[in-house]
Image (cartoon, rainbow, N blue to C red):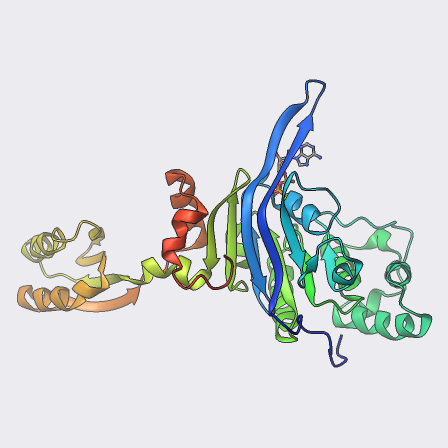
Length: 342
Ligand SMILES: Nc1ncnc2c1ncn2[C@@H]1O[C@H](COP(=O)(O)OP(=O)(O)OP(=O)(O)O)[C@@H](O)[C@H]1O
Ligand SMILES: [Mg+2]
């Protein structure tokens, strides 16, 4: 892991993952009821990117991953990894995967689990002997290397899962719900680790049903709802619209000043007063209207005490898209450069 990494992206392109019109329909029960788990999802991922693949429970995240890894056959669509068909062993060898519910025999020690996985990857005995203690140390499990997993906490087992995903020094890491079950300290440590892995030049594909969990480490997202990508693209462009708004806090001397400012805001349909308490008024308005606000405030004896851009959260974006039923295609207008996730 701390060794120099020669791998990197496919030389001809920095696109490492391309998903074209992926669909997966399951048939369940005696009557063969159709469950459309993933519906016509398309996106790309570039080398070095951290992609958040987000959505509520049952929205199709794990099903998509299983298709990416060739564990199940898509009903429709194409997937290529490092420019190769996803089933190509050369492509698969460059991936590290941590499943949603990593399961290890609890009578084993972490060194034994990793040794077994290393053998599956075809790592020779010397490499395994060198890399396994190094990885366990890096993941903060040095002290527990020779303890059986039976006594491990959820966070410690999660670290074993991450350690095994790194054994083959992968270029692309796929972590399915990495934050699940971790306490706030564990989450922070895992976020820091993911940033480190990205800084080493690895690409990360992360799923979460808690949108805010991975927001700070992702540079682009695909948001699923009932199998459909309802928003996708670089985070900055997806949330860009909201940077055009500002939130202001003003000290207001009297009712007349409040009415004057309310009247000013009525010129913009998206502007409005959030709260007025004890002579303090908070409001939001288009950023372009800030000069008019400060001029009017001065006229009526109000003082602008705070002003900051409004940034939407992924949760708010999700709610907006889920409610309007907008599709990723419609979202394309938010991301004119088409960079990142497509
Ligand atoms: N093998 C299967 N047979 C039938 N239906 C399935 C199968 N696997 C998944 N599904 C269904 O497909 C849908 C998507 O499931 P999936 O596990 O991909 O969701 P998810 O986004 O990973 O959810 P979570 O956040 O709970 O992990 C669900 O309705 C699920 O019940
Ligand atoms: Mg899942």
